[in-house]
Image (cartoon, rainbow, N blue to C red; front, side):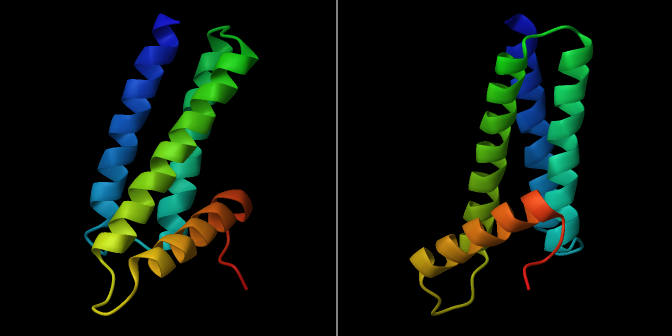
Length: 108
């Protein structure tokens, strides 16, 4: 369990830094979210190599995805245009994040 806790803390810190970089406006949503996906996949692959349980790894990956989604949505709300409704921005941001994370492309 110690490795999972370490991986969770490390993963969250890396994701936070990725979000900080994304918030500068120099990175497109697609690139940002696919980078997050690769970070989480890399952590999962390493933990599999270390022999940790599949269930523990999957739980950690889910936690990191939820964390990344929350950070992304929070950033989108804080950077919304004046007059935009927070709930609308939140809903749209969730849809964008989930679609891009799953498909690695923009929704059509």
